[in-house]
Image (cartoon, rainbow, N blue to C red; front, side, top):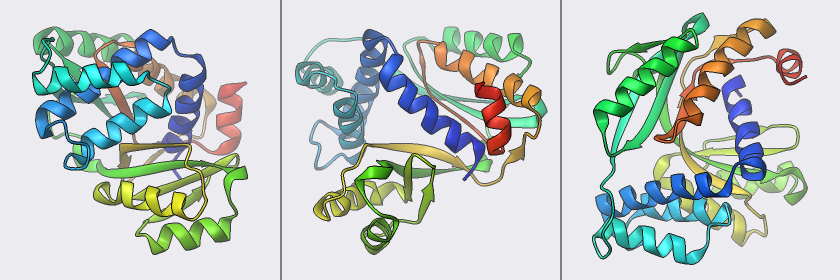
Length: 250
C-alpha cells in the first residue's frame, strides 16, 4: 500500500465530511456530464457513467442533480461542454503527478495548472512523461466494522478482485476497471456494505518520502492542485511510512 493511496483515502474521507457541498456537487456533475456525453445516458450500457453516478450517490448528491447532469451530457438539456484533459508533472523529490481535469477552456486551465505546479515547487512535464508510471484501477473502500478479513477475501477474490489492503480503519479492495461493479455487487450480495467506489490511477512504482519536511512539500502541491475548480483527480507515486505520515498530520 503506497503512501499516496493511504493519503488519498484519508483525503476522500475528509472531503466527504468537510468539503463545501456546492463545490463537491459541481465536480461530480461535470464527471457525470462528460461520462454521459461519451457513452450515453444508460447506466447499464455505460459503466463509466454508472461509476460516476454511484460516486454522486455516495456523496449524497440529490437525485434531481444527477438526472440533470445526465441530461446535459446527452444533450437533452443545454449546458457548458466540458472536455477531459490530463496534465503531467513533478512535485518535489521527483514525485510523478497526474492531474485529471474537466474544462471548457483548455488554454486557461493549462496555464493555471502550470502556475500551481510552479508556485509550489513542482514543474509541468510533457505529455507521456509520467503517465507510464500509473495504471487505471477500480477501488472499493470498506469500513473495518463491515466485515472480517476472511469474509472479505472470500467474497472479493472469488469475484475477481486483484488485491485487498488493510488501511487500519478499513479495507481497500483493488480491481481491474471493468470488474469494479462486479466485485461491488458480489460484496453486497455477501452482506458486506461498501463505503465508496472509484476509478483511479495507482502507481506502479513509488518514491519513498522518509522525512516529514519532504512529505509536506509534496502534499502542498497536491493540495493546491485539488483546490482548482477544473481539477477532478490528482494522483502521485510516493510512499510515506506511517510514522512520517503521523508527523505530517500532527
